[in-house]
Amino acid sequence: MTDPLTPKDLASELNVSAKQVREYLRSKYGTLPPFETRWQLSDAQASEIRAHFSESNKSQ
Image 1 (cartoon, rainbow, N blue to C red):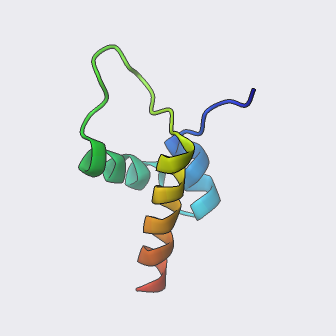
Image 2: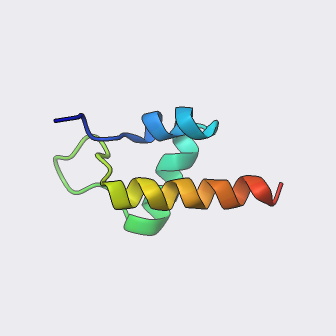
């Protein structure tokens, strides 16, 4: 079993800051539930984030 993806993992892959990824996650999904300390992203969430930042990079 592989470790779940984190905003830091995706940020590194996409050449954006982890803060940008976390801000996007909060805008889309709200804040983490109580007692959660890290985002652990599903494959669907990771794909959505990749698509979002790919589109953002194209428009720059």
